[in-house]
Length: 195
Figure 1: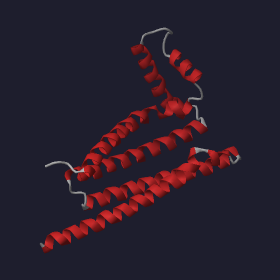
Figure 2: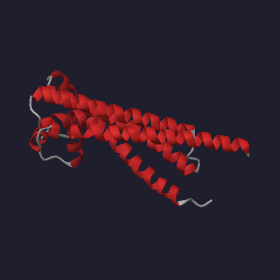
Figure 3: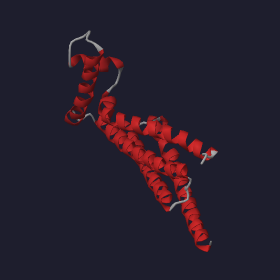
Figure 4: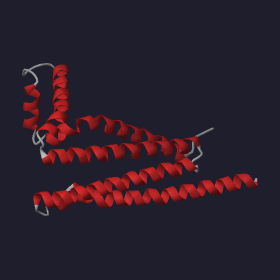
C-alpha cells in the first residue's frame, strides 16, 4: 500500500522529532557546565585544568567530559545561586521537553500506521499539554525569581518572559488537539459499531 502525502510528511517529521529528542537527551548531562560557563575563556581554563595543553582530539573530548561532570559537583558545593537556579530550570524544562517530544513520536507513529484517531493519541497530547504548562509555570517562577533577585526589570527582556506565553499557548493547543482526537476516536468507534 502506497503512503499518503500525510504519512510521508509524518515520516519526515518523525525523523526531525527523533533527532531533536536525541539532541535533547545528549545536552541534559551538560547543563551544569553550561550554566557555570560565563565565557569561552572559562571553558578553555576548565579544560586545561584537567590536562596539559596541545593534546590530540580524543584527550580534549575526555577533558571536556571531565569538566562538565565536575561542574555537577561544583554547582552544588560552591552554591552559586544563579548557576544553581539556571541548572535546575534548564534540567526541569529539558525533561519536560523530552516528554513532549516522545509523545509527539507516539502520535506520529499512529499517523504512519494510518490509524491516527485513537484514544492513546488523546492521552499523549494531554500529557504533552501538561508538560507545556509545567514549562510555562517554571519560566514564570524563574522570571519572578529573577525580578526579585536582581531587583531590576531586565529579566522581562529574557527568554523566560517569552517562554511563559509560548508554552502556555502550546499547552492550550495540545489540549484542543487532544479533545479533537478523543472526539474523532469516539466517532470512529461509533461508526465501526454501526457498520
